[in-house]
Image 1 (cartoon, rainbow, N blue to C red):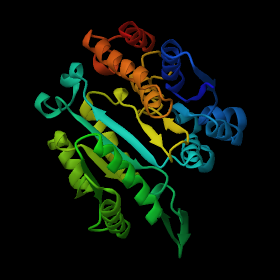
Image 2: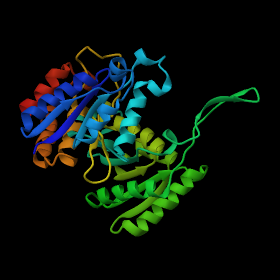
Image 3: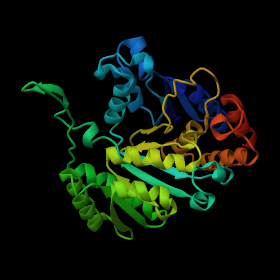
Image 4: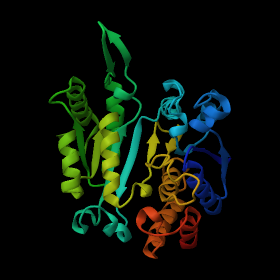
Length: 350
């Protein structure tokens, strides 16, 4: 029986980069069933909701979901619970993909494209494991209201023992296949939820972290160290908020945010959600100049983690590297290739 890949192109440059990922998927593997659907602003325009129950049901019946991007100025005035980003959050929550894997690796051909010196990023290969379905992005109470004539806005950072334990176990498992080191980050010095995070990660390590060395660091210190000496890190474990911030910072170490993929995983045997780290980039949408590599490498992660196609994933990763070695560059990398031409270069390397 064919495994199913659901494509959700979304908004902005999403449809452009996902089209190239689909082209490569169809060339690379024949025994995968590919379907498409709507999410974000595209879904709101068509159905009045950024994620429909029908699309979520289709996602739950797939082995992997490959998403492009959501959002844009078109929907700025839309009610908050109907904005494109609400669809993405609902998709993550509905799939219960609690562990977001964001690799930051620097292809040899792009070492000089980084904003840091060559010696700082050459050979960089780190993994940020971000908790994705809890914390301040989902906690309640939240809102904007007025008390005693004073307007206020508030969000609540809440984590439970099971939420932290399960994502910590993912980080430990990944570390065992790498250098065996995990750095957990939080703000336990000023946040009760941060102190709870440190305590729970430490407990999880005692029970499930055999063979893995665990260290702790404040999130702001980690942010500083990422631009001072990024190669000191291997696996960084973070909550939803700090993982979001640190992974975007780490993305720029590699030369372009247009190069970096992500995987969001749940319990074994459940669908994985894969998406490029970049956003919808409405300023260049429709121009055919977006870098498709992050979407292509998100496909590579889907092949590896959810679709059981490790050899195809290895070939695709090598092909992206070879295309870059041959000089293939989109504008974000200082070149002139279009989105289609960059994908053509990867296909030629395959």
